Image: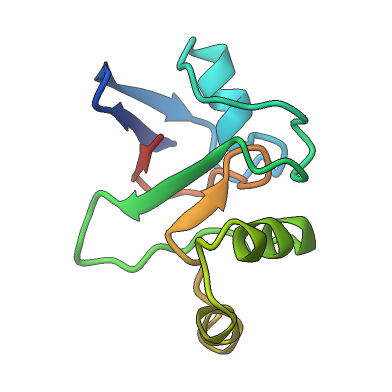
Length: 116
């Protein structure tokens, strides 16, 4: 089980349990099930309205996270959240960037903070 804390300055932080490794539980799905108001439109990784910042709760551990989908790569580049150089580094290091699409990111077995 992973603990996912959703944080927004307009709302009180909310921590929920997520079933890790299900390969179907996206951050957006988890947020919607727990009535957390993350903005979204297409739910398919094309519009970019569900961009969130994800970080590890335990600063001693680097985030595992899943790899970026091709849709995420394109939307994050178009939105200016990640540069071409940063994208190349993400691929080399095999570590995800802090900015993700909630509709595409699969929850893993790690405690994370999601800022929306």
